[in-house]
Length: 256
Image (cartoon, rainbow, N blue to C red; front, side, top):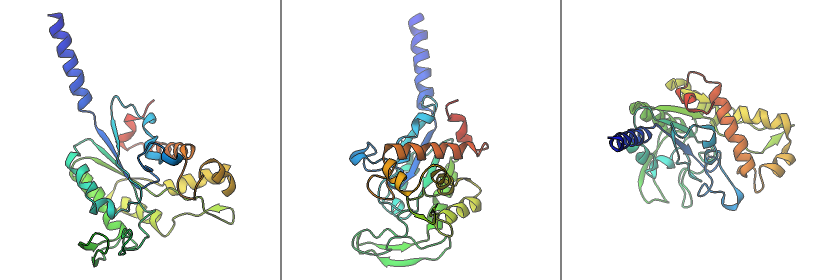
């Protein structure tokens, strides 16, 4: 009898573990660099954020991948795989923008989206993929991720892009009037949680660093990609931004 009860308890505990909600993270190399295991000493914040969460209660999957824009994360079928698994109670944190300013159609990357959040389209024969494609605006793609997530009764969370180590007149250059603003506008239009990483991290940089110090401590190779220390700094900023949104249900899974 005791063995049967123990077996039943184990089965129940396992089923509860399996039914944990999942936090899906999508984005570019600033969210997951390379394999996400620190190759070349570079890391994205999504690879180091799990210690802030009670992973006995929530499962975390970082699906971000270097070089992708809001457009190509969708067109490569990566979003479809998440949608196939997404279930009620899950979460999606999204951060795009660093690669959306590239060429819309070329033979090397073809990853750019139309600037802004409008409904404009550009019809192309993609020189890279050899496929016919209708290209949309950055905002169109972001709003699609938000709406698709909500359609599964999951919770979308939009982040503005983390700032680069680019300074002017003693200030970190923001994405104002471009991708940071457009991300905020998409979140507001769709009524979902927004974390302004661009502004929040820029202020933190300015409070304790300058361009040279940031390069020495966080940006060993260029002005965009962080080392482990920089990724941890940015992950902490994500959590701080989340905590400033107390109504967001993801907060309940943070460690006390």
